[in-house]
Image (cartoon, rainbow, N blue to C red):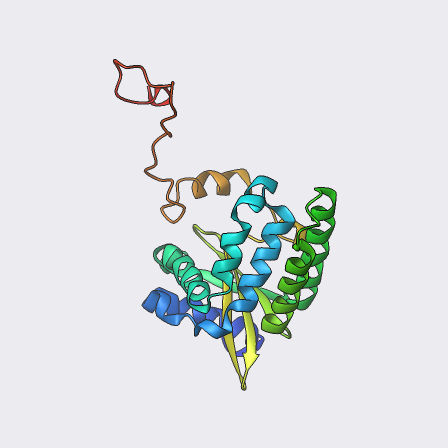
Length: 225
């Protein structure tokens, strides 16, 4: 709290957002029409690094969700609610910020090159990629991506802020920044703890039951034996 008055405005805004989440969870999320830029940015990140099979299968539904401002807001609300309990006890502090426009250009370039190499640069994919990049710039232009380091899980937060009408608003949040745009891969100990995270839904997960691996006399997957 001592460093906030002298910190840059984007970092103060991100820190205030985290404090708001600690107290009020998703009530801190901005209105739907301000969130499309971040959603477009993260769809580009997905195109740049996601599974080709998943892209082919899920892209139509992802674009349909992206076109509905209420679904975009719901996606952000779900992300905030998923991590709110962990953030409340993680002692996250803003440590740096960077302009987000270069990151949009960088991820758009990587996505374009990758889609070309995969043979997916057809069927309107160029229009999709270029449209997402344009929308990301329109929604995030002039904004900043603030990094917050946390003492406990989730260990790191990235919060996107942008100035609107004289005030800085938070328009996006993630716990992992891809390496293609400068993200640091988490260490082995961090990965181990995050795999037990309640926010990821893995702390009490059982092994998947796949046909053929369960003995008719044993009522549980062999992996759990």
